[in-house]
Length: 184
Image 1 (tube, rainbow, N blue to C red):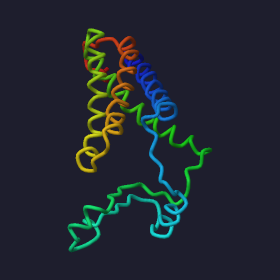
Image 2 (tube, rainbow, N blue to C red):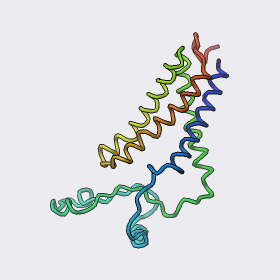
Image 3 (spheres, rainbow, N blue to C red):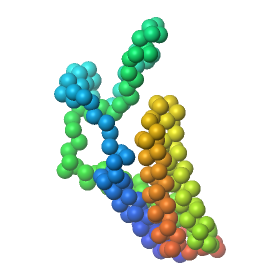
Image 4 (cartoon, rainbow, N blue to C red):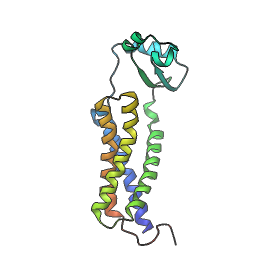
């Protein structure tokens, strides 16, 4: 039984990693918008930031006594700034870390699935797992930062689709256990 859980874990992690690659590389819902004059924006960012980090630009955050009319016309920016481009050759590290996170989450899902006897209930557990991940990834940005609807939908659907695909295969591998999974 433990062997089936470990196999399902590995398969689930591979499926979710493949979906991440497909979604980020080939689907347009993660394509960020670009600035009209990238060279000027780049120069301003380089001159006014001090390293890798989260940055925000808003009169409400900067000014102690903000001009209420000015705050209506100024943009709100919340961004991750890196001092240099991401090196395309360094994709190994993010892929390994992503796979490791997916491996851990797939193990949790496999353990939960092992308590279910029917395939459909295992599939529903995976779907709910993905829905939970999607809501926790998208809701705070939608609520607090007014993430646009398309980006919110993408952040909600991505894990939902990924973990539903994973659960569809994992559910075929994992069998119901009658005893505790890690007891002897």
